[in-house]
Length: 231
Image (tube, rainbow, N blue to C red; front, side, top):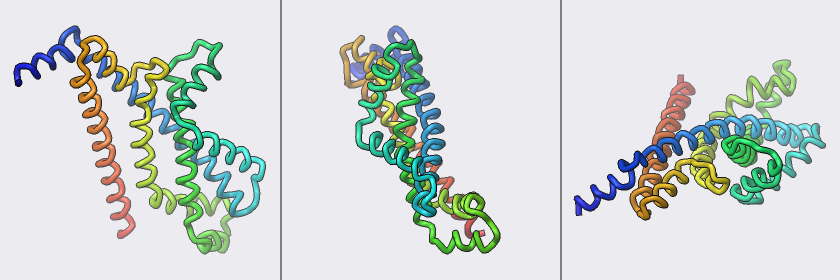
């Protein structure tokens, strides 16, 4: 049995340097995730500010309508469908890098969820905090920057961390546009060796290790924030 596993390991990963499919796929997955996270944070932050400002002050009404449409469409459709629409419809007549398309699609998708997480954090802050800022002579924008956002960040950090973990795993559908990410790398090996067990288990283990590592970093950051509060 051990010899059989050893032979399968050699066939799937060592022969013809097939391990490179996983390494190159992992690089693509991390690249897509990293830049999609940045887009998601920036877009989600802007949408959350617009929506919370409208709910607090009644201003930015038109922008709020656009934001609600964006949130409804993105949250109401599967990410894989959004990926296919962006690649095969929006950029159908343009020769474009598949990695860029994946970054854009996952970034737009993540932004909708990040927006609601941040908006929920802003709306959870007591109105007395806003009034305290005004009493100190701060305008609405200054109150948000110096008083509200620092509290929001600490409150929504666990939810944001979970969203980024979900995003990392969601990138596994990038193979639908023939992007050679980690999952696609495992699938290529499977198609060459006709053995599904080894490559797919390897892909699952790599994803699990990345999620555990990110969760550990997130827990460390949360502990440091709590220790700073006590000081």
